[in-house]
Image (cartoon, rainbow, N blue to C red; front, side, top):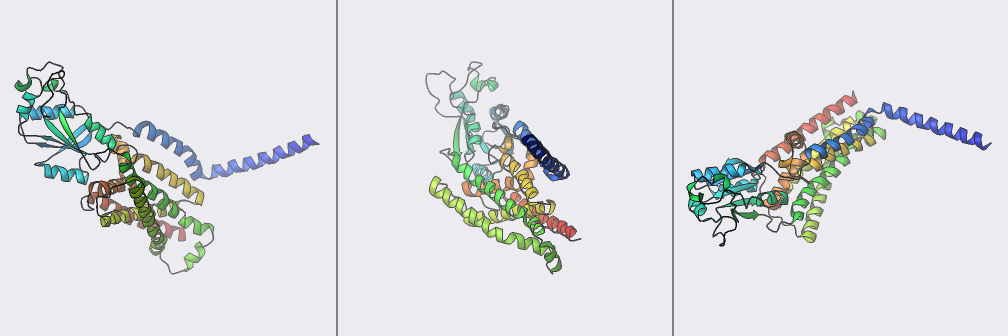
Length: 388
């Protein structure tokens, strides 16, 4: 008897199992996520993620303008830590570029570079160096970038030993302190200062996209779509009505994160709260419209959540939140530029930590604005197709 019972139970379990497999095979979206999520994670961690910052965008203020300064610049760039992309006339322009995030660091070479080189002792000298031959001005808000630039303090001068002013140096001579380093915005090198503004972007991405990604799907599953079709509400009006309540939710989350960061971790907010509010509004709207587009593609709320996770993973890993943007391969940077989180990371850190304004970060602000407009158009057109 019990054998027959077990056999019948196994048959029923197998029938349910076969039914689930058949249903899963017909659900192309879920099946695609089963395959794509592990592959995307493997590709991101294997190729895109790199903790070694290389080819950081840097600037030069060369007041010496001599053969020695030009060879020193070449020797510095040969380390592949920095890539000199800008030349500034004075320190004011250089500091403005660091504030705007155009460059991560600026190398200042003084007018008396040649005389400083002649007085600079070799490694192992009995007397310490009277003064460095130049100075790095560094965006210290990113601790990884700051650590990479600080590694250039003891740049070997052997590559320019053929110059007369250091001809007496041994071939492998390394000065004790070739450059001084000035860390802006985060001189204490507290990692939490850089993490909290980035965490603001991650949390808003997760919640805003998740809230709206199921908006249209939920109406369809609850049977409300027929009522919406019969109303005079236009697709664009429906999209705007769907995201409007969550804008307030986004501002509440922003205020909570910043207040907690200030009280618990002494997070400095150097920029204008008005600029920060404008940047947050642009990013919240961009994230909400992204969620609406997902909602018009997904057929179930489960698919909407799966697609949200698919967007969230690269937003965390490629936006510069955890790993330096400059250290990623070009292909990964192109993907990162398509994500709203990448642009908000720059804006939030620029405003909160560097006292930058929205106008200083205009390219990122315009990108978020354009993304929002395009997302609303795509979502409303796809919703019109559903009505048809």
